[in-house]
Length: 423
Picture 1 (cartoon, rainbow, N blue to C red):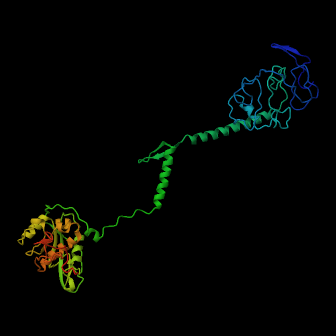
Picture 2 (picture 1 turned 180 degrees about the horizontal axis):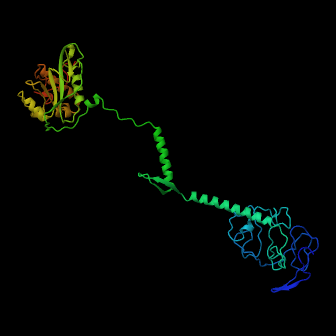
Picture 3 (picture 1 turned 90 degrees about the horizontal axis):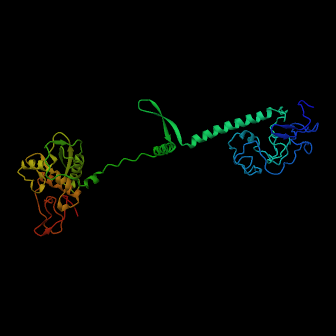
């Protein structure tokens, strides 16, 4: 009779009459199933056709799982191509996982539900002879089933779920958009902070921009103004300004360029004016040694020194200080704010207001006015007196008081900064 005791006839249980039949001797191999009816299955290794109509089932039915729709009473064969991902919750997931990837129509061992190609589960019915079968003998004795195979499946399924859980946790962490960073403050203490992923991206973009900026050449420094630019630009100055009367010699040395009579001179600038003394000294040297000036024809040459003996001192001073020094030679420069050659002293006084702002007869032509101012006052030091324009439309002589006027007695002259202007 085998290793299990067999009951030869159907008997009643506490819940009702359940007929139990003896299996046909030597039927099938592997797993053996007993018929719940009084007859053997219809053929060796085969199952009887399931009865029609709904039947109860001990398994918990879930929405969307491999068991079909809840409450429909009919089994729907899952389509592997449309099966949702293996994410069905519930207590039967281990069992369902064993059927993932099986072809319901492929070759299979009819007695091995774990083999590839195992048939789909039959729909439940009230007279299903296999309803509620859990691998045990109806008398409560264990059936001879291989224990290692389900354990192996459960172990593989458990490992798969563990790996899937780890991967899901990693993806969730990345998609959360928050990363932990360590910030070190000025005291060297480390503190943990949470930085939004957007901030991290902005920092990365800023670092990329900084890298590109580092590759670009640094912006070039603005070029300093040339002598011509400075000479052509007016600068603000108060016409009533009176400085402290302290002078400072402009350093450097400008050699006399010609072979004529040499005149040595120094350039002094009153302290606190805020004017470019170096440019002023450069203008004096260039103007005096110009061929159109008093160096015309090589008759004279001018050399600038910053110390030692000098024939005269060209001084740039505030209007108030100019008045003081011009008055030493009996000249009143307070009227019209003009300059002078203070012949009783060593100084030729150039009024800083006129140097900075020019005069009405010259308009915006500040450069030629400055050249005229130098030539006119040095001309006095060389012995030349004031003269007047005699022809209408002619150039005014450099010794005419062009700061004050260009017209007299109906004659209108043109502005002229040079002693020998040529044609």
